[in-house]
Length: 113
Image (cartoon, rainbow, N blue to C red):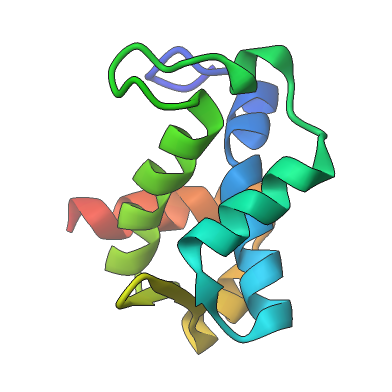
């Protein structure tokens, strides 16, 4: 269990939206964030918990998690945002090879620096 009370399996599931974003951005070469969100909705692999409204933001939980995780990824230079379009960087492509947990952990470490 991590210091924030999240188990390894939960951490991987929470990281699912970020992994989706990286994979889809790599395939498309950059897309507006609303397109990526719509594509994730079409996949219909979200749990009921992920579809719930997140109390802190009033948005759907998985969308909130996605947006929060992009802050770390931008700081780590894994992701670049420009006028609503999200692009996967070379550093992001390399980070994808770390696996979902290490990718998010390294992005979080970069945010703390």
